Image 1: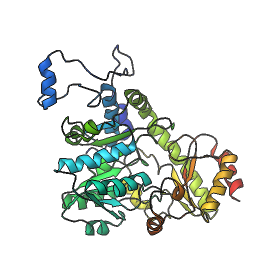
Image 2: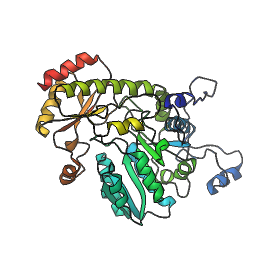
Image 3: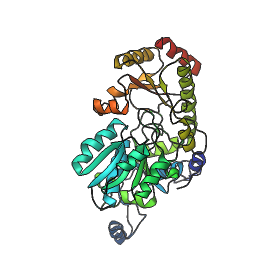
Image 4: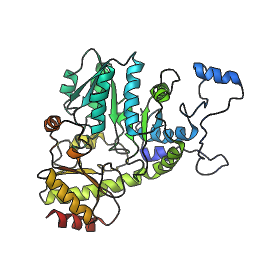
Amino acid sequence: MKNLHPDQAIRDVQHFGEEGGVVPVIDVASTSTFLDPQDMERTFTGEKQGCYLYSRHSNPTVNIFGKKIAAMEGAEAALGVASGMAAISCTVEQIFLNQGNLNGHLIASQTLYGGTYAFFKNVLSKRGIKVTFVDTSDVKAVEAAITPETKMIYAETLSNPLLTVSDIKALSDVSKKHDLKLVVDNTFTPMIVQPLALGADVVVHSCTKYISGSSDFIAGAIAGSQEFIASLIDVNFGSVMLTGPVMDPRVAHELYLRMDHLGVRMKAHSETALYFAQKMATEGMEVIYPGLENHPQHHLFKQMMGKGNFGFGGILTLECKDAEAARILATKLQDNKFGLYAVSLGFSRTLMSCSAKSTSSEIPEEERAKMGLAEGLLRFSIGYSGDAETMWERFLSCYK
């Protein structure tokens, strides 16, 4: 896959509106006309490609949004879907379907977004897919977990919420050695890392987060080879086509426009997060942030960064004494207008949540303990609005 400057690649996606406008029109039609009835028949049989048929199959506005996602990731193609979980679930199912059936085994990072963990453990296991959770920062442990039934490896570029870095190049080497597919969730690091350039086969995003940037849409995206993306909408075997989590064209149009300033926003998130992380570290606080020299994989992450210098991302975590201490601090910070106590991330304002009691609560307590996820871990999605010095003063006044 290409390793391009993602900002330039996004900028070079150019699509004119129907009457020559500088932005494309929104095509909301649920179905499309065939002038020759035989063309419809050929489309259903797969003989004819590239036709618009029905919006669950493909839509012009969703397709042009996919072109910008593909450009950002250096992919041959990409597809917008209804949510990040739709992107994950459809990708996993399609990889197994493309290899014959829904039976088999996958290896997943032991530290994952709670919804992903719950889907893998509680849903896939009932569909005949066995899942082994492994520390994907330990490549030897990943390889040791491979069985003859293994079909894929799943990891997050930066784990949610512990910010562990997956060595995508090393995981890719293992996956290729054993003829497996490597899927990477790049939600935390759009623009910053291009997993496909490091050897991943498929990249998924929750576009609800940074790609939206305004916490006002639920959306997802899948990027990979042209062949894989086409398989997702195959009329007989496509997991997106047949389960139906399609992206609304109105959402696709809005996200298409927002992609042009994603790079500016990611730099702003990163700069502010690094500022706060450095301040917290100076004060002796237990802060985790990949941009700090003391992060165990700081140098690995720097090596994985693509072109453009978009920083280390907008997520940091702070270790509090316990869950009650985390809640008390978050309440003070919200009252003092530092941030909002809410799940999700990528908003222009800072969002805070106690991961063990929210987005990782689906993971059993004993499993959270194994992965080192403490009850008092407070996750911050650092926004960029406001004056950083003023916001730091507000934080410090609440912390002390």
